[in-house]
Amino acid sequence: MICDVCRIREAEIYQPHTGRRLCRQCFIEDIRKRVEKEAEIIGLQKAKKILLAVSGGKDSFVLADTLASFIDHNKLIAYNIVEGIHGYNRKEQVEQLKKFLTDLGIELIEDSFKDSVGYTLDEMVKSSMEKGLNVSACTFCGGFRRKLINNAGRMVNADYVATGHNLDDEVQAIVINLIRGDLIRLIRFGDKPLKLSSKFVLRVKPLRKIYEWETTMYAYYKGYNFQEVECPYITTRPTLRAKVRELLYILEETKPGSLLNIIEEFDKISENVRKEYSTTSELRELPRCKICGEPTSYGREICKNCELLIKSGLLHQNLPIS
Ligand code: SF4
Ligand code: ZN
Ligand code: ZN
Image (cartoon, rainbow, N blue to C red):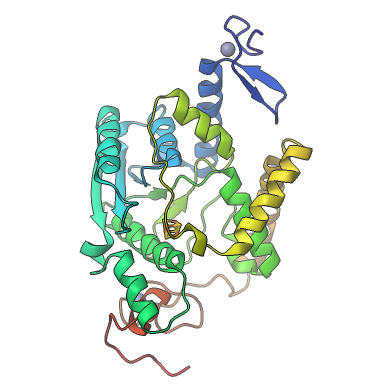
């Protein structure tokens, strides 16, 4: 069968949401164009410096490869964190990532929880369990990762921090926040980044309209050997996300293009809600943590990360009485 776009090469891939059959080159080109379009909406092309938060997974590969196809590599700088998870963080993975980024002309900053927080993720989880805390590894992992990525973005004077979240991740997060009724958190998910603290570097997700299966195929076609070992803590992930993920798969299968429609409609709604909120005090500057000085949620005196360390017996400070 011939490719529906170039009408020259043999089609290899069926794209359910467009109903087209594409050859390898036209598929790669399609992904790049869609990422470029999203980057234009965000304003990435005008940035002087963009920090790419890369994990070594397929999405971070696709993020770097697509952005480097239309943004000068000198404006891109990558940042990787080794969480310190036994059997999961492998040296070869960082080496492979480094080689691939070097080939693209992108510098890589290497960091780890051990160096920047003082403990590996395994050590944090062990201590919290010994103290009888019922907190998942992912809560520690996500919180500290966000903080370190933001610090790195500030350190290199980046205008934006770009992460590799894909369409599936993004719609799952939107639905979860809808279920929880968390409007402030929800409107952060629009296509334009929202800055709630002068200490935050704007976070953007250029792959937010690319399906997960598409990032997998892109990485595969480009010959990238991505990490296939699953994190041993994956089973501690909140079950609501797993359920939402499952439901969204069924929805997409029944009506291809559903996830794209959800995100496009959501962006319009979030734009309007933001306008409304900007005239109220709801979107005011976030308070700062009394211990580390980083932004924390409204109504908190110390951030969740510092609180977790204190409760795990890894930071010796008194918790404010709540
Ligand atoms: Fe971190 Fe959880 Fe992901 Fe493992 S599964 S890397 S602990 S967020
Ligand atoms: Zn083609
Ligand atoms: Zn703090």
